[in-house]
Length: 151
Image (cartoon, rainbow, N blue to C red; front, side, top):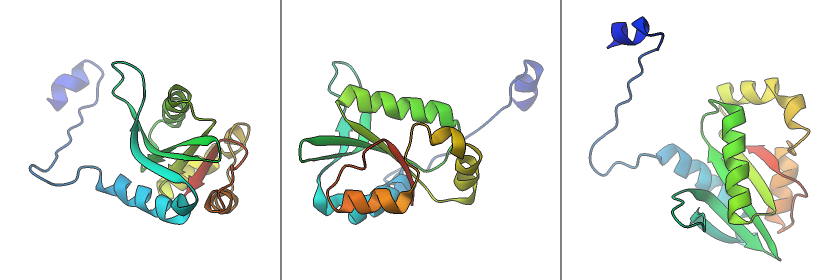
């Protein structure tokens, strides 16, 4: 398969998954739990909130509501295609009617390197001060703009 893929200019990639009851998104679930633990008491929290469009199977990882505000939170454990991941999160936020979108990014070395490289570009759209955004959310306050936080 590797040779066939290479012959047509592709790279072969194989993923294996455990059978049975193993939680396939355990890593993401841990980051969701950490985020909700830090800010959830100040908000109504809905996990895996479905997009309310007929036939749309997408969902927002965490939906925070309170004080007339709706904040869509997407958790990313591995930044692979930053532009596509941001676009998908912003579209989900739009389609669920959120005023704000927050990306919770796993604090791995690789993810931090991606965010550091794109820092100046991201600043135009996102608040990047994790401590400030988490403090505002923990107090039940809107951070004032879309944000990326690293946990």
